[in-house]
Length: 246
Image (cartoon, rainbow, N blue to C red; front, side):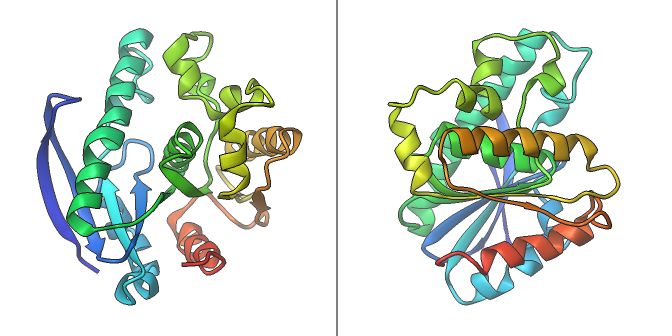
């Protein structure tokens, strides 16, 4: 299924950014690319096709933004402060520029759904937990939830803000976001097969924090045959989409 291609200038990043749009439904779904991936990966690896029932029935609008992981999370030789500042600029591009433009153009209503596979699952969770005022659903497939995996012993306010595990663990019990989380749909899924070990550990840590904070979440561990691969994410995404009131 082919979408509409766009290339627009971003003030936050001072560069052109590419993305694709699919469908015209009232619910906005944002699908983030995997590590070092591009905006066309979701289509090229068959993930858009798995969403055909929701797209063709007019239930969702799907946007696939481009990423810059190669300059931020996947750039261990770069200055960590500069890397996380650039990551934050990309984050604000999504929040301040891309989503408002898509919502105005497509007429989507209410809060959005965030999803992604691998590093895209991290991004989906990061956007959801930082902005439950803008997102009410997250489907993270084989995601990672702690920023120190990439930044190691470097920590500043921006690294902390982009680390869902750290932020949620230290969130005070009277924080207004907690009630928003408890009234959202949180789905974290990971396999137990090849190349899932680090993601499995991170997911278990995230599950423990969610339970401690009394935040309902569906944390689903698939079998030892379920590898870190598109063929499994193609099965998982529609499986979980079918459980949502869309």
